[in-house]
Length: 297
Image (cartoon, rainbow, N blue to C red; front, side, top):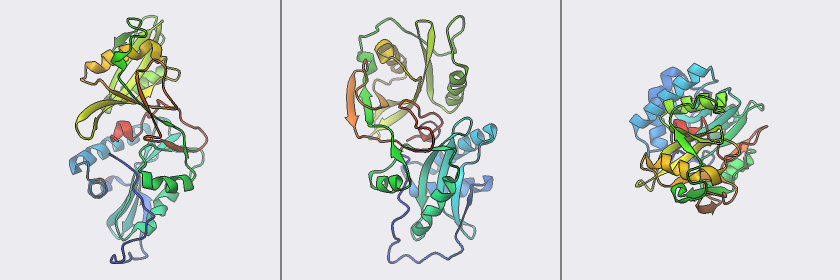
């Protein structure tokens, strides 16, 4: 689970105070190996190889799109002692702040990372994987919760709209209406390793991007990374269930403000809250280009 770690707590009494030469700068290409080691220390649920793979993938995406960069690091001399990743979406108007970690003995410098990352007020910043003990800190930084919980659903159990929608793994052609921006998003996330498919109904193609997750390390589940605004689950739920079943996935996790009509399951109030700060409040069902797709939460 990739989360933002608390970086404001006081260092342990036995820890030596770091020298005053600690500085904050952007991540550079030469930092990747050392950064992967640091992240493995902070987030040991993921292996060193997994972090290297994620950072390489994130670097390639950032360079290809001309985006600001991978994030910021704290350095003491030549040693990395803290980090905060910044995952920008296409266009660079939204940034997912992820994987905030500062080594013990340096945590009083952690706010330097946040201050550096939040400088541009034209950007909407999101935090999608907060730990409970960090939420007061996040809210003090100006972030506000924009989801009320998650739907844990079994879409294949839905009988509503049965047979009214079909599935396509490829971009639909002919007279079917396809949003070109969403088509590009689908291609990008397929390249990131996400599961992508289209639901076709009433002459329109509805995009779906999901990421495979494991609950408690055992139970596979599909986390919705992206679905179109206004998706009518009453028409599409069963078709989505069929598409996921092909990948051995029968449970779906979707950010929501309450129970979702047409999606059989349980609304878990207050679970997995998402936070945002900036000019545009994100909507439920859009975690595109965040750690959910690039790293894995």
